[in-house]
Length: 107
Image 1 (cartoon, helix red, strand yellow):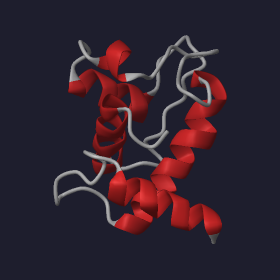
Image 2 (image 1 turned 120 degrees about the vertical axis):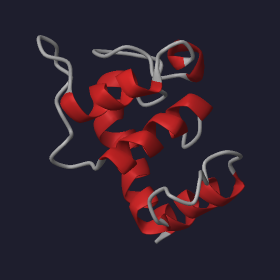
Image 3 (image 1 turned 180 degrees about the vertical axis):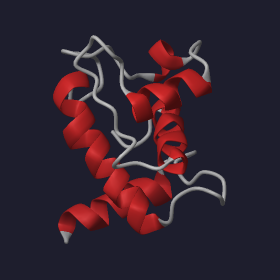
Image 4 (image 1 turned 90 degrees about the vertical axis):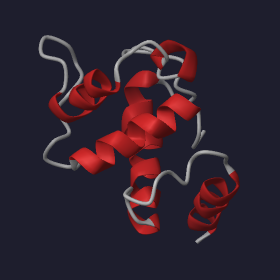
């Protein structure tokens, strides 16, 4: 319960994390933030500064096209440890996660 309340506070009080109305609902946002922290964080670092995978910080993503980042999330990067998430995430989910990453939210 404490984790859910913390995530909700982050969503409510982090500028830019409540994105356009066509994004995932609040329950799905909680799930995506959990995935971002635990699954993405296991390779990209819990603070997203990099590790096995590259950093996922706003400065490192700034010049990358949205479509490339969404495609990387959904289809992975062949020849690297980055797996495809298409079976677990919708395109809407991937767009929302990329926006969260670009804003540095959810840390």
